[in-house]
Each structure stands twice: as structure tokens, then as C-alpha cells.
Amino acid sequence: MSLTRSQVAALLAAHGLTPSKALGQHFLIDPNTARRIVRLAGVGTGDQVLEVGPGLGSLTLALLDAGAQVTAVELDARLADVVAEVTAGRCMVVVGDALEVDLASVLGEGATRVVANLPYNVAVPIVVRLLEEAPSVTSLLVMVQTEVAERLAAPPGSRTYGGVSVKVDYFARARVVARVPRSVFLPEPNVDSSLVAVERRDAVAVDPEQVSYERLFEVVRAAFAHRRKMLRRSLDGIVSPEAFERAGVDPTQRPEELGVTAFGRLAAVP
Image (cartoon, rainbow, N blue to C red; front, top):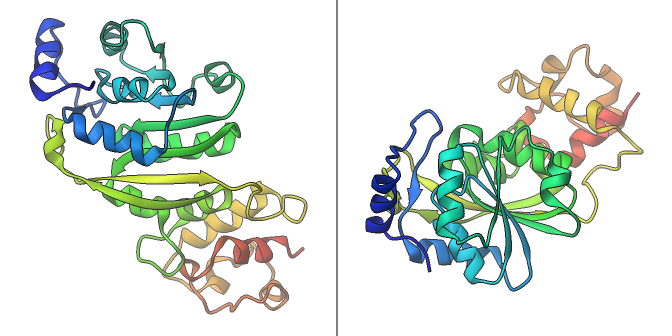
């Protein structure tokens, strides 16, 4: 079961709700898309799933139908009440900001999958926070703006590769798995959407004993702050001139040419 266009419209009318532009609310109205997301996420019976921004509960219902144990975090208390109603209490709904809630208490014990139609304006910080602060989250399948999906999954050398691509690659492997038409939302967004799958690595890509996370991303941030410049210029004062040769990195390269392990070698040189 999942919500259709007419059911979503009826719920909004019954509760006197109007989608909030400020919160980026676009409600899923296509049951086939909801089931497709669940299938691509590989969710099955007994899986613990965190859903961020459940809206009116369309994807939530599809996750529950697959046998998942779902905890949903919803910023809008009005929508949280609707989700509780629509799911007949089968889903734990936490009212709060996914960027601020206590993840340990929300996630509980055991491995967790994240499956969500993320609010576009906070999609990147939510993904980064889950990777940084919630090691029990083993995978994410999130719907985001296509431009954001491409950034999250971009390999070195691509036009969308940047600091967030390096950060995701440090923790996980990411890939864009599907496009989603605008027509499956009410109201229709002004941007295209995509699904990106993120699978956490067994171990981070750069050994923290060789270089700290803070030091690594100090270098990454400095490099991408001037992405048009050669590394020897953008990292002047951040790494020594001798570090390039010792790390096996060409100082005339630009940041988009380096993968996370190359950044790690460069950052590790004293």
C-alpha cells in the first residue's frame, strides 16, 4: 500500500495542510515509485529503517509493507500526526530536526538502513551527518535533487566532483541508481530528482592512524576553495612544497583530479 495523488490531496484537505515551500515539502504520490525505492534499497523483513522527512507517509507505508521496522524523523509536527494516523501506529515517529536529533536514541541498537526522500535544501548535511556520526547506518538510499546526487557519487575527474564527493568516498561507496520524474510529486518540484545509493565501507578509505579526519578535510577544503588553481597554489601554507613529491602528487594538478587516498597521502606528510 502507498498513497496516490487523490489520497494525498484528500489528506491535505482533511488536515487543512498546504505544502511548505520553506521546508521543501513535495509529497510522493506514486505507489510504483515508492515500491521501486524500497526494492532498490534492498529492504526486507525485520530490517531497521530510518526515514528522514516522511511527509504524509507514502514511502513509509511501502517500507512497512516490506516488513521493515521504521523510525521516521519529521520536522513538521503537523505531518508527524498524519504519518502516525496513516500508518496506524506501526511506525515510530520522532518530531525533530534530523540535523539536531540525538541519533543514538533515534537509531537504537543494531544495523540501520536509511531510506528517504530528503528535503532538498538540507540533503547534503543530513547525508554527511549520518556518515560522520552514525556508524550503525550501513547503507542509505535517498532521493535528492539530481545535481546533488551527482555530487555525492562523483568520481575524481568529473565536473561535479568536489569536497563532498571526497567526504562521501572516505566513508562509503556511492552511485546514482535511478532518475525520478517530477510528476510523481505533489506539488511538482522545479528540479529533477535522482536516487543515490550509499554503502558504508568496512573501514574508512584513509587510515585515521596515518592522518586524522580533521587534518585530511582541512586539506580537502583548502584545495576545493580554489578549485581552478593548481594544488601548489591553493595549498600554499597548508602543506609544505616537499609534501607533494613525498606523497607522489603532482603539484600542478587541480583538486578535482585527486581521489580520497591521494588527498590522504598529501595530508599525512608532516
